[in-house]
Image (cartoon, rainbow over all chains, first blue to last red; front, side, top):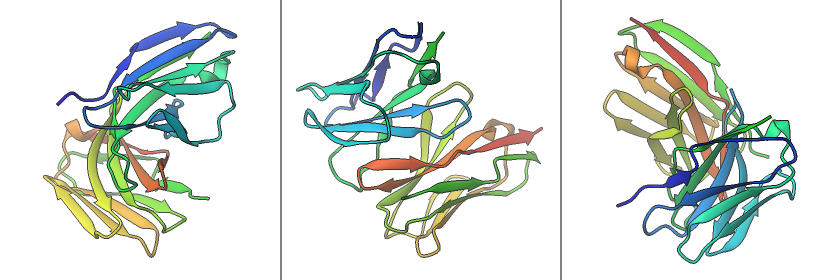
Length: 113
Length: 110
């Protein structure tokens, strides 16, 4: 069974640029959730995708957008990067039940200069 | 709105001590609660998950309890070791998302 993978591991961008982060869900999982973790804080929910549709969204602006593909992998896109977007971005996959465990990938460390 | 608080923010204890980390949440309507470990600059490792119908879960030297009515969970670590040094995060599963505390940074001194 393959776990959740994320790419790239690290990324450096400048303010105003756009970035795409990728996540491959665990085999058999059809739901992907994305979280942002700033330094010294707990993760914050960005959004969740279930069967290629956005299923819920946290308090993030529209420049944070996502996609889920038929194989249930997912992308997180961030436009017009700001310095405060520097964070660890975590992806988690699960089956679609509210009681199911979310399994996390290792994260992508984004630095915005 | 669900809020999760972890106390203390940091804890330093000598090796071998038993210790308790605390997590509180404001809305008892949760599906489950999960404890995670995070090493510096790394991702999250799931330690224990307690379903809302359960009172506690155990894994090795770790024991987590859940009291939904009071909005509290504790993570008990027995016979602490330097390798237990990390940040410990609790998260409640509320609807479709996990809502997180800010974590307790634990240092175990040899």
